[in-house]
Image: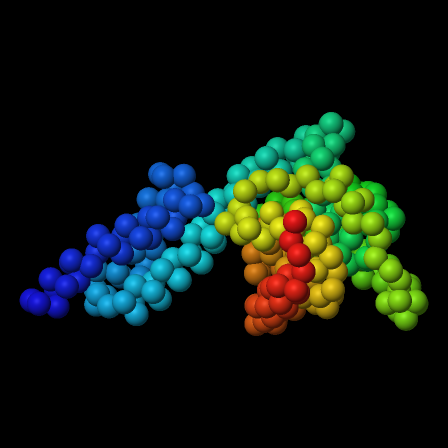
Length: 264
């Protein structure tokens, strides 16, 4: 009985703290729905009320709500994509222009961090959208167009890199990162808004350029493009465990670099 009283007494506090977390990234109705799903999934009423459980639960809740928002945004994005794709296949060029406008920034950013300079990234945007247009009839609409497009971009960048002299490219100096600002059109708020706000800062872009390619790629796919683990796996061909490892190590290395740099 005593244990049950502790469980019941702990629920409002746990629920309130989870709601506070969820409301930081979701509107109130969505936050309530996400919290209800999380509580049901974790059987919270049966958990003992201890500080350790609260802390662990809040950490799990933070990840759950971020993924909930990611899925919500992906569904909204996919609805618009399907309409534009159908119109494009029916011969409407303006509909494809909508897709280009929405995703040119994502393609440019991905290509820039893969290829290391503005000129090659601009060429990549042109080539990737051309390839996507000619293959649009093969697109599986159960996927997100963004993920499919970035798969094409990743393959294109790999082809380009194979044609380079590796030593010469490694010695190449960075380009003026102000060139990137024109293409960074994705200003939507996300649960990783701190990282994305810093992403637009030249200091952090310099720091990203110092990361190994394998870390830089998964960080930009995950944070900048809001792709899921499965979508990143499809693009990179890496196992899920490797993707998670690259994200974790990349975040740690980026943090260390930023600690030694002056943020504006």
